[in-house]
Length: 170
Image 1 (cartoon, rainbow, N blue to C red):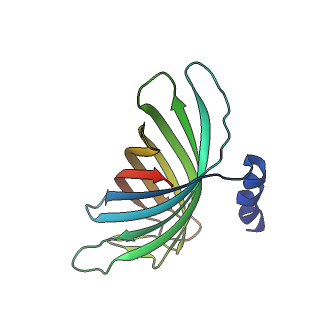
Image 2 (cartoon, rainbow, N blue to C red):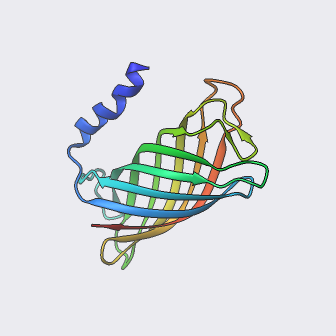
Image 3 (tube, rainbow, N blue to C red):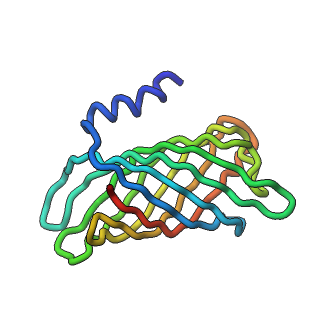
């Protein structure tokens, strides 16, 4: 477990200091049809790799709070998450298209979210997404996020959120 906790610290040292803060909001729906609401804070790595005429690779740290709405039979759940996210930005467009992916950790307020049994409050967060960078340091896009404990504890139903997001750097 100590090695798992040391990975984000080692990665932070590798990527260097983060720069501007970016606030985001997302409105999503789970695989079971319940709503999810996410507020996030991201810090750009201010680094690029694989620079070419096609584009470049960059990334950011993402910390977020999510409220998971549930049906009438269940009360809602809350989660806090943290993840490094890699982003590939494509060059040569008025509005810059990008794709992103990342794996992080999430801590849930309870182990049952709607009809899904997570098995533990500690879960991993896997994400993929796509979007556009707009003027004035704004972004819009879509994301698919999956949460599960990777079989650490049973049951391990996991839960997904498919969302639209908006962000702006300050």
